[in-house]
Amino acid sequence: MNFVKSLLLIAILNVGFTASAQDLVKYVNTLQGTWSTAQLSYGATYPTVALPYGEHFFSAQTGKNGDGRKYQYQLDKIRGFQQVHQCSPWMGDYATYSLMPVEGKLVVTEDARATTFKHTNELAGPDYYAVKFDNGISGEITPAERGAYMRFKFTGNGDAYLVFDGGNGKADITILPNERKLIGWVNNGFWFPGKFKAFFVIEFNQPFVSYGTCADKGKTIKANQT
Image 1 (spheres, rainbow, N blue to C red):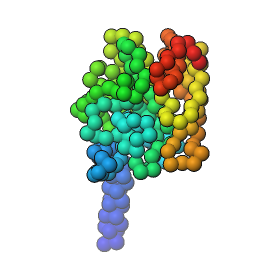
Image 2: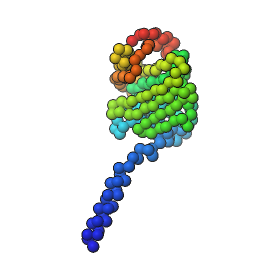
Image 3: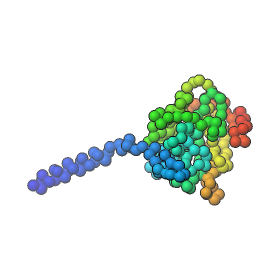
Image 4: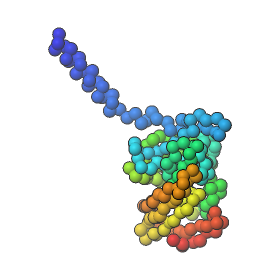
């Protein structure tokens, strides 16, 4: 009898180990809880892409820089793909920046570059986020330990740009076209005394055809400025 019980116990343990090895990430929908307003919240979350205990998180951004509700399901435009650290909409975010693909005419301000999309063309999980905009451009994010990998696909119907936005605070950026890199820092936040500074290195797998900077909230664009 004891031998039979031992066999049964081993069989149960084996089943348990097999179940624990299943991929449970596929059951996570990070869009849940994103339909929120200041008057009524259904979770006040945003579709974070991150590794467990990762140093930085990343999310699609429907709200403006500094808006605690950075992603609201009921909105139909994305302004950028943002590095985030926000723990709640009431605290706001800090040390953030974003990237946004633009094609054809170069536009850089938050409102001008905001692009419409449909949730049927969106996939949101903790390990992968993807969206295809109504204009045919697509963006993807998957996390790394201290950053993320992003991929943008353009339609080929015009010049392709990637707009870097350093947020509402101070920022410093250096463009290194020969190395296919952007390096610098951002220092922003609303409720945080002294704010927080985040340093970044962004590396591309494609050469820069042209580059530049903008000032005066996007009113002045200077080509070939690093």
